[in-house]
Length: 245
Ligand code: PEP
Image 1 (cartoon, rainbow, N blue to C red):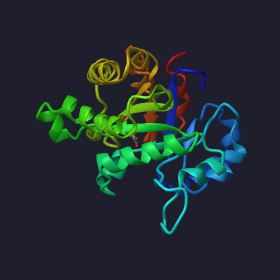
Image 2 (cartoon, rainbow, N blue to C red; image 1 turned 90 degrees about the horizontal axis):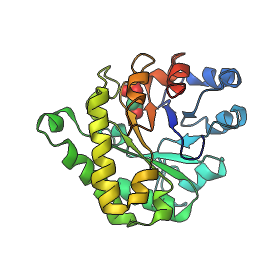
Image 3 (cartoon, rainbow, N blue to C red; image 1 turned 90 degrees about the vertical axis):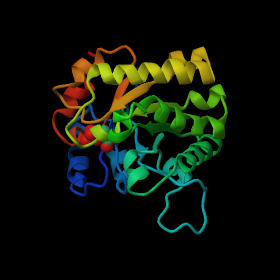
């Protein structure tokens, strides 16, 4: 990942058969990926320009928290990133804005990991014209916990992932995505944090990105990369990785 260049993240979720992909990994240099329990195997076999991320973590270093992974464990494995607040964590595992922001705070204060901080509205919220309110609420929860320190925002990538577009085959149009990314940049990062932060923070888009729609999305000025689920498991991920070339 070039400094402040685009970021293409692949979220392999909990797909067991991916162990096969890891074995084949060295020939697929474009991959930038994220996996759960095979991280150490993945990290051993990945090329240097690819970085690894946990898909979630807990907000303690260690203790009696059965089933949880601490961010320090991810660091021990040589991960550089952790994804927090993915909509599947919010909906299936009922993680609240506050809990997600607390996790981010713990990660930023106690480790060197960077955070992909996911936000986005549901279909119902979009239809009620609440998209901007929802992303503002989710980002404000973060700001309430971590303040406006540049050191922390340097390690945050915002992932705008409209819930209605994740895994549904319904991508936001480039215009819809651009509108929300611009809103996040101008009305949150710039006003609430700083102009510099607005200029350098990457805002990546996720929600049914494919080899077919990636080039048009990439043309939008406020889209700085992608968080890709389904298509990161397929050959077309190579095309997605090349969206800005
Ligand atoms: C995701 O899981 O973050 C995601 C965007 O999935 P998909 O690309 O399959 O919509």
